[in-house]
Structure formats: C-alpha cells, structure tokens
Amino acid sequence: MKTLKVLLLESHPGAGDTTADQLVQDGHQVHRCHEPGDTGFACVGLGPDRHCPIDHHIDAAVLVRAGDEEVPTPHEDGVRCAIRAGIPLVEVNDD
Image 1 (cartoon, rainbow, N blue to C red):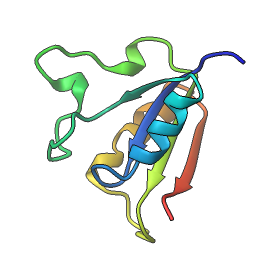
Image 2: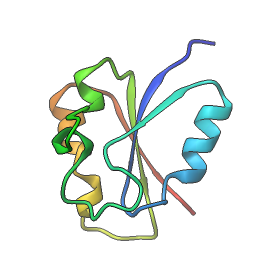
Image 3: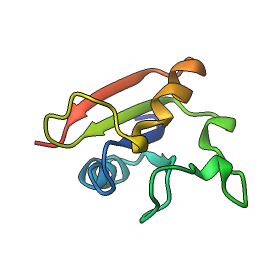
C-alpha cells in the first residue's frame, strides 16, 4: 500500500485524534494545520516557522467534525486552503 500524506483537519481540538492514530497505524503520514492547544486563529503556516503542510505535497485532506455542528469552526480553516490547492477532501463525523 502507498503511504499517503494526509492533512488532518478537525472542528475542535482533539476531534481527529482517533482518526490520526488510525491513519498512522495504517502507515500514512499525518499533518495538521494547528498545533495542539492553539486557539484556532493562527495556523502553523502563520507561526514562527511558517511550515504550512500544503506548501509540500499532500495527497488528501480529512476533516473530522465533532457532533452535529452545522457551522464551520475556526479550526476548520484549512478546508478552504485544501480546496484552493485542489486537494481531495473527505469529511467524517467522530461519532
């Protein structure tokens, strides 16, 4: 199986942890737009190192949404970037 570089997006901090663990267990590389514990405003691309995962090859993006919220949260801002970059996007619920 080919190792994929996956951009993991989540509606709330920690919502995608189980999915991330499974992807890593299956041999894929997981990249995130936000550091653990951040507020959701500044993504890693705006941080001191400016290391946006999308600046490097990403095979697919996975958005993990917690609960049944209908309105996107600030932690989901990477969805726009993934769509703009033409990265395939899959949305899953954490329940």
